[in-house]
Length: 90
Image (cartoon, rainbow, N blue to C red; front, side, top):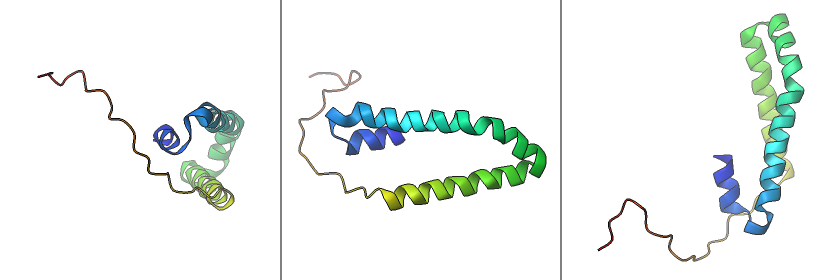
């Protein structure tokens, strides 16, 4: 879903860099958080650990939306896409 949003709102020339930043941050966060997840789960229990993750996600989302204003995507007219493989030509 995020890849589709970036593809729809980012100019083609900058798309590779933007996708690299998003996926790099995701994997960095996953690697950074993984050693702590087991410790938090063992100390607080599964429900509390999920609650900590939800709170972290909400804070992250709020900071992202607050720090980065995302203008609406420009409406441009593009040529129609090629016909699908499954459609018969007449």
